[in-house]
Amino acid sequence: MQQKPLLEFPCLFPIKIMGINNQDLIPEVIAIISANCANFDMNKDIMIKHSKNNKYISITATIMANSQVQLDNIYLSLNKHELVKITL
Image (cartoon, rainbow, N blue to C red; front, top):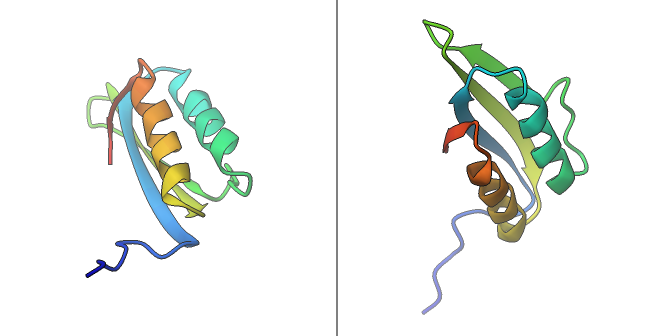
């Protein structure tokens, strides 16, 4: 018996990234996502929040995901970045 996939593609998918508050984090995250998602619009598909003490940044990037492979590639690239601490 085959299980139904958890996601049906294409679908809107929010990617949450938390990292060190550094001037390079947001452009690096945008570059990683844009390299893997041609329809990503950094002007409307991203939300940024700073931590209370301004030490960390929380980024939510909502993409139109086309496959599990695409999501895996994005998460692997984000998790390799030195400024990224957590991805959800």
